[in-house]
Length: 426
Image (cartoon, rainbow, N blue to C red; front, top):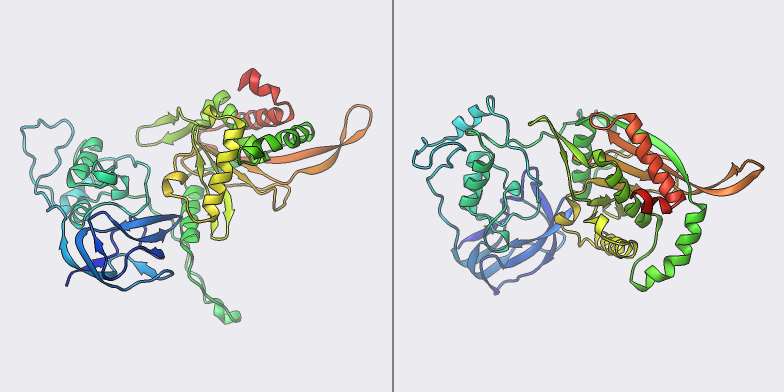
């Protein structure tokens, strides 16, 4: 009797947690129908069937930890995957009527040393909609399937999609290589000095640790600090907060900073850039998608609000509220956590006078927000109490100079102190 195994989930994803079962023994299923929900790293996704048939036995339940290739259920029926084609992608520049010699794995690996790797597309990281034969074909070519866009129903990836992906980025036969994750030194025997307790890292913690390790080691980062007098802004925020609440959102300092940051990115386009060392170019994003760090019970998640420059403050406040709720309820998809050009991390609700956030690569900068404080400020005649907001801007020093960072952060501070600045320059 055929069995169903946990499919290939993407590079660096070897296991996950079963969130919710969808099917049970006796259920008839069709290919691409969801079988159950699986949480991998930061995303919860549906695992689709790769067969038509009837479930005979389910070996997992909610809360179980599973690994790639683990048998999780059996069924009666037949798999409907497409057989592997023998054709090999035609490299760019090769005439269509010239048939290249077959490429074997060894040949592909040898090509790594002489040809730059294909620039990575943004990884989807969800449960990949591809049959076993497609996964096998991709592995033979060294292709990360999470970077391939599927042309089939619901984004299903075919062998032709893999070929098209390889062909689009090749000047010759090249293996697509993932970025290596820095491996920390092995821990000493900590139990020598007293009792210890071990528990497995959650998917979110594992993903966060890997991502921050890559981000920190990929380039020099510097942090610029400044303060904004938000006394007048707080009066306006409280005045208009009820209007936003009627629409289902909350007018917070974070939502205001999202809008101000979008305007600042328009004035300082370098902060929307990313360095491409393969082509020795700076890539300037023409879109304005801003990520916002959300503290959840599972760890830090960063949903992305898209096209911030095209939305008003009420719309942004509503969307921020909805994304925050989805993050805490484990409903965010990986697509909703990708594509940012700038990130905001607000720890003001917890405390602190300042911190140095790590740039969320390939972003060029991240804005850190700390707790507002009442401080005595000299107005020329006397000291008066003012609400002061500490801000910190970490940036990729390879792309952004210190003077540019100081101007960018000062612009944000002035916009907070006098919102009219937005209508003048933003």
